[in-house]
Image (cartoon, rainbow, N blue to C red; front, side, top):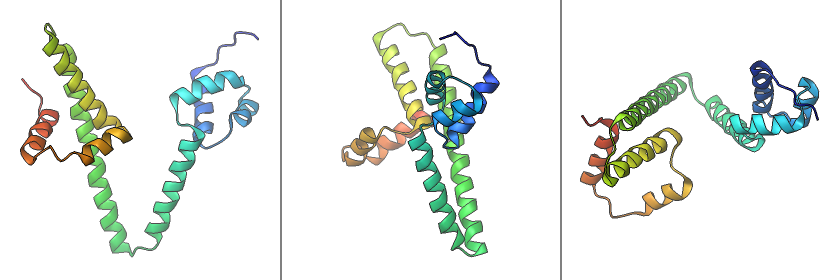
Length: 161
């Protein structure tokens, strides 16, 4: 096959169609982009069809639940969700700043590298969420006390000087 280059706009269009739940075959037919290219480029950058279907199902479930709320209840829910989203965005921005700071710091000893890796790992968990097994392990762990949890939170939220 010919080595055809596709523009960023073509790939973005294909990704949007993929995100909307269309099959790779349908996208290939509509855009003229080879199926193998679509498979590599859209799956790597976006969500799989199954992930999109799950997200759509979640959105429908939320919309149905909201339909049963009064206007006041809907407003309260929207405010609570908005606050949680702002809090998550803040945590993500702090986590990213901490990673940037950790990457700029000199790492000489093994302990320095260990600390840097820990900072990056905690930031990744903040941004992407914990892996299911890690989340279960944390939930099952009775060894962490409140003071230790506060120290961990302070490490994540407050960048060290």
